[in-house]
Length: 212
Image (tube, rainbow, N blue to C red; front, side, top):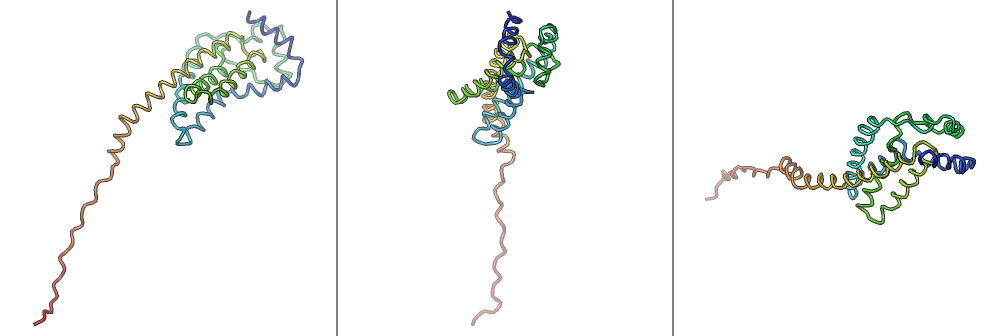
């Protein structure tokens, strides 16, 4: 089923140069988790959204640990063009000058990182977070369109990224609770200004000249 879907995309759409380049630049949003990292950094800058940034950052840390450190190294699945060199996927990549990753195909890192960030934003901002989810979905679609991943890689990335988003949301809430209940009072007491000591004043000197 995986390879049949990729072959269908290749035969049906790859003759459309304009669509190829749209998908090529769309997929760059997930390159090295760029869009998700920029989102977290932007939220962290402003005081009003700082805790949202902490939540997104927590989700991305979970994503990196699970996807890049554990799954990609343990599964080590070959990419579609490596397993099926006769289907023309690599020639297609060369024709549009798209980067071919060298790590494991499962799960899709682009998909996982963007879904991790998007799900946390939906949990925090509800309807306002849906555009982020839409971006994550179209980047996931671009990974299949460009034959960079098997559809099962992308589906795995969506599920794992979503789970990291939920985990990051609750981890962020826990961090906030610990900060407010433990760290903030500790820092407040640690750097609390001591009350100013009253300055002793000398009694006024009596006037040497006394009137008779």
